[in-house]
Amino acid sequence: MSLINVIPITRRYWPVTLFLLLLLLSGIALWYFWTPLLMQTIVWQAQLNREMTQLLQRVAEHPHQAGVTLMLFSLVYGVLHAMGPGHGKVVISTFLATHPARLKTSLKLTLLAALVQGGVAIVLVTVMLVLLKTSSRQLHLSSYWLEKGSYLLIAALGVWVSVRALRSLKTLLQPPPKLTIHSLRPVHQHDANCGCGHAHLPSAEQIAQAVSWKTQLLLVFSMGLRPCSGAIMMLLFAKVIGVYWWGVASAAIMALGTAVTVSAVGLLVHRSRALAQRLGQRSEGQGAKWLLPLSGLLGGIILLVAAFILWQSATPGIGGGISPLGI
Image (cartoon, rainbow, N blue to C red):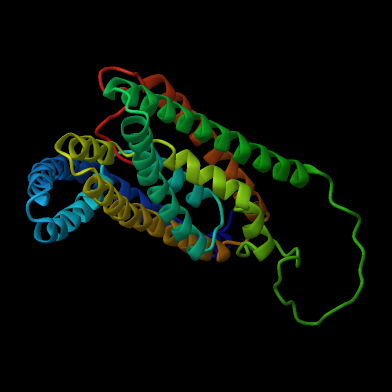
C-alpha cells in the first residue's frame, strides 16, 4: 500500500481512534479512583444513616423542625447510596450504550426505575408489616424473591434485545435486491436510504423500534423490582419507634436522590454514545450498517451474563436478600 493511500485512511479514522483512546484513559482513571471513592461513599452513608435514625427519633417530639432536616438528609443519602455498585446501573448503562434513544426517553427511564425501586420498598413493608402484620423474617424473604424476580427480568431483557439484534443481522445477511435506476441526480444528497455507505445517525423509526413501550417497561421493572435496601432499613426503624409515615416520606425522598445519580449515569452514557455516532459519521465504510445490530447483540449478551451472575450470588441469608448495594 502506498503512502498516498495510507494518509487518507488515517485521516478518515482518526476521530474514532481518538474517541477509543479517550475511552480507554477514562476507564483506567475510573478503575484507579473507583475503590477510594466507593469506600468514601460508604463512610458518608454510614454517617448519614446514624444522623437519620437520630432525626427519626426526634420527629415524634419536633415533627416540623426535625422532619425538614430528615428530608434533606434522605435526599443526600439517596444520591450517595446510588454511587455504589448495583445491578440497575449495569442494566441502564448497557442498554443506553447499545441502543439509540432520545435524551428525554433516557432520563425518563432512569427516573422511573429509581422511583419504582423506592415504591416497591414502601409497598412491601406497608403490606407485610402494617397491613398483614407479618414478621421481619417474612419481610426479608419476600424481598429476596423480589430480588430474584428482578434478575429474571434482566435475563428476559437480554433475550429480548438479543433476538431483535439477530433479526436485524439476518436482514442484513440477505442478498440485496437488484439495482434499479429511477433517476439521476448530479449532486449526491445524504438521507437514511441513500446507500452510500456513510454511517448516518439512526432514523426516528430505528429509535422508536429500539425503545418501544414494551422494552421500556421491561427495562424499568428489571431495575426497579428489587426493593431499595436503604429504604427498607429506614422503614423498619420508623415502624419500630412509631413514626412509620415519616419513614415512608424519607424513603420517597431517598428514591428521588437515587434518581438523580442514576439519571446522571444515564445522561453520561447517552452523551458518550451520541459522540461516538457523530465521530462514526466521519468514517465511511460498508461496515457502519452493522454497528447498531452488533452492539445490540453485545448488549443482550452482557445482560444475560449479568443476570446469571446476580442470580447465582443472591442468597436469602439473614437479611433475606437485602444487601448494602443500591440500584
